[in-house]
Picture 1 (cartoon, rainbow, N blue to C red):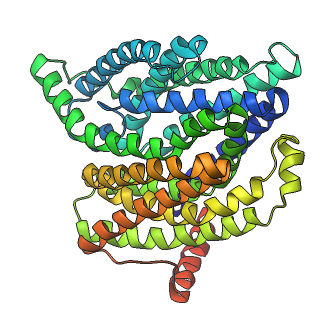
Picture 2: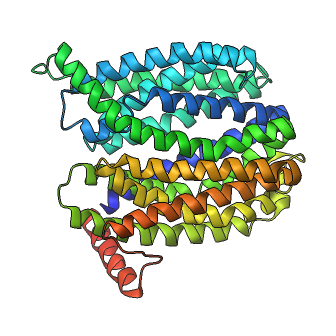
Picture 3: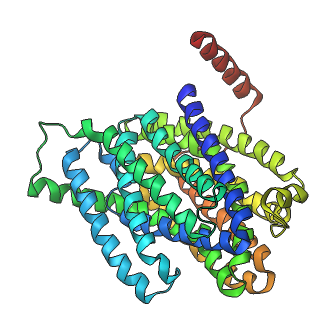
Length: 424
């Protein structure tokens, strides 16, 4: 367990560093307005990908060991193509992104969805090394392509980021095909009845799961669109950098929950899954708290030196975001307890209420308080979403926990020493 969680964390730490470097490059070379434009494009790609994964995505983790994988693949592919085509026409009539980006955003989201399908198969089979490599490739190749374009002055416009995404997702897609090619078992055959069963199962679980992700992502990024409307792209760029830095704290709980999700999805012992969720929540909250303390001690002058003079007041924004960011670790870890048991509706309800809170508070705060209003709206949503997930877990027989006890820490330290001694 320890080695797998540390492995997940290591990959996410490197990915977070790459994403920070990407933010620095874009901020310095195209400014706050260009960074805001890039953030809108990335948010739109993520939103469309969630709808692409309505049939497929994370629900494949739960179904990979239960249904014919060829049927799961095909049903997911066909749905992604259908949604991508529909989204293209929707964006033509609903101008959520600049017109020149519409086709690019749709194609990028489709490729991202295919990678997600393959990644979910790998996670469902607990092949975490291959899963982590795919997660690592996207930011790594994006950073490399951006650096080459900016360093050699090939492209110094916001479109450079879109091109970098195409290179990154294209290469990652080809790599993912190599990883999942052995999952096409010869004894499994595609049939109309099996395909329909796979589609229904994917839609049943995927709709609930992706509904939670739709609500969650909209809660996270709805403020971007409010800021763009009331304040312009530059404010979006400043706010998005503060969010990127402070949300890096979540890579700790995300690393924990990946192992937790795969383990729970393959377990039938409910008592065991509650116990590990409680233990993992304690350590997730403690490490996230310590990480937040370190981040909040960084002076604002450092961020203006890092990103540029336009990117001021990041420290104040992070202070407003920090309480909600910390509390949301409950939703990240406990939410995966319900996902692992196929109870995606719990997370959908919690995220749905969080979205309502985001919309109401963003509508009220952003026109008056600008980027600080966006931070207040986000924190409010994080608190409400986490509270609902905690209540569901408590009703399910779980315990409300905060930090590990001294005894817990002592036992964990003993386990770590034992693990290291065996490794050496």
